[in-house]
Length: 173
Image 1 (cartoon, rainbow, N blue to C red):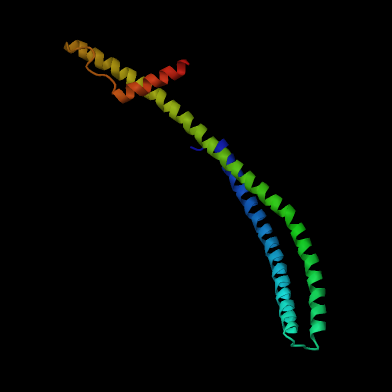
Image 2: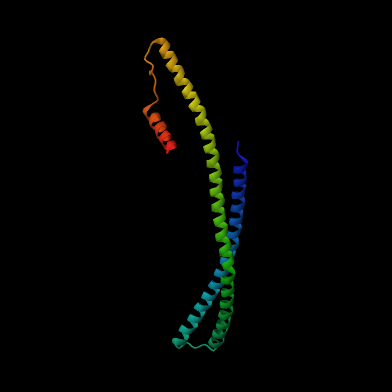
């Protein structure tokens, strides 16, 4: 049976994951737009370099001047657009980082809730085993005494003894 705390934590994880996916999608879209503008500027720079190389090689074309002017105007417009796209992406990057942080926190809280419930169940189980082992050891001693065998015909394994001893010492400190 899953506790309400775990159910709530799992719901919070699902919501945080959804929010993180949405924030990442918005950021990816903004980055794609920015990259698209940057690629257009790079293409214009290649055209500009091609025309300048042709002119330096004495291959004059009467349209070079007009093309260079158009490239310059387009580059200025696209550069302004690139600056706006870059600025518009800043809050999206912040939102993405925050959504990822909240998702990680929600996942940690879920793990904590699961671990706390597991610990509670394990402690309950250990208490039952403690009582069962104590009752069993007492019965072994009683039966052994009735049969006339030595009273300590059973003892916990060395590993169990060491774990129990260590736990006892830790509890005392």
